[in-house]
Length: 538
Ligand code: HEM
Image (tube, rainbow, N blue to C red; front, side, top):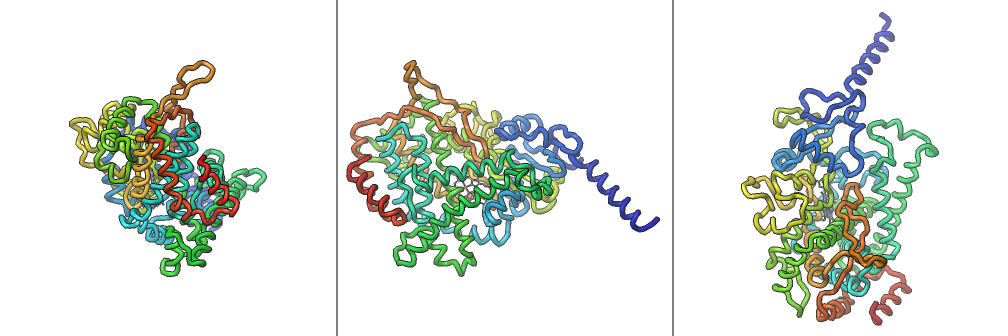
């Protein structure tokens, strides 16, 4: 036989085997939903609230099951023992990320959260972020959290109808202050409105608006007129660049003038050579910390308020505790949390009831793995089904109910008789080497906001102006992407005590010096109007 024909036949045979195997679940994989040729389970892969379907499948196929996505494989883990054994203990083998071409394009491959485990980008960024976790750094950021939380209470007191946007402002402003040294006094500021647009665009980029480029790479070469996602990606990149690099320039300007305000990025700029980071990398790192730190924490606060409205008994108990420990004469401070077990339980219960990232962020395997007799191939996507773990009726009493008492009765909120030795409080922040580096920072600022909000306000359903009837909140009205965020909702926000309102006003004005420290980047006109507003109150 001619060599050319032999090679041709071999190629055809190879292709035939590949097509035949595509979508088939190999024998050594964990079980899972029935597959169809070529696609495997791709046709039934849930795009809306995927965690709900993943949890339903976990009840059918067990705490470890597999999904076939054409040629590739995904594994879903839905128990603490599987998470501990595979994702925590064997993190060097399970801590990689699946490649997402479109997101790498948008971030120029400089995103620590997407970078391969052990890569230069990942190692350098994690090393640079490390000081953000140190207790002394957290202490240095406490005055900023205190001042921003004071504005949150002030805004809610004077414009209660804007509470949803105020949670976005406070978390964004805290993040921009400590990361770039630039705060955001208004929701309407172009930085915040652009950032909200970036979050929306990111959701679109990870939705079905973008074809599966990683499964079908030839689609990357489709001309732009037939591929609107290319413009979407370019717009996202430009908008992100505009926000992050404008703030970076202002940090550089402050440093050059010798007027640094102690922001995280200033520290990086001063150590840029040692850290081997170019300007592009520094700007992206700052941006990633805003992305990781602000939408997640505002999502948490919105779910918290939603739960208070839907479960008034929990709100009443939290109010009772805060009144007993704090009273009318002062607002809460960071150290008060240690004396309030019920409020601590409320925080844990929000993380359980509505985890910010119900599937965490997908991992992938660096090598083939053997686990419980299965063989998991290299490059398999691993989903940590947080929702499934935290809503398991075998583990939690009435898991669909917001019931903080469960965490007062047992450390991990589990039912009597459940062996909780594999549980850990950090679960909502992911696992292993990829565990969220912002966990302590987020916990610090969120605890203060939660205490302040409970101390100052009561939340109840909004009243329909036409009928005078209460509008019940919808606990399922969420945006579903990587994070699970309540859609804007209405509520009645009532100050709890006139004396507390006075303290809120005083505390807001007393924080003016802290605010000014982070307002250098504002235009002279903006600074002037802020001063006028502060003088008059707003
Ligand atoms: C309620 C607040 C937060 C929650 C629930 C949360 C949750 C998570 C989760 C689930 C992951 C993925 C972990 C994994 O892959 O196993 C993650 C990663 C990450 N988070 Fe957070 N996060 C929060 C706040 C923050 C804050 C405040 C920052 C920074 C200021 C931050 C920065 C990051 C970064 C950079 C990563 C990527 C880490 C890596 O891939 O190595 N997060 N977070």
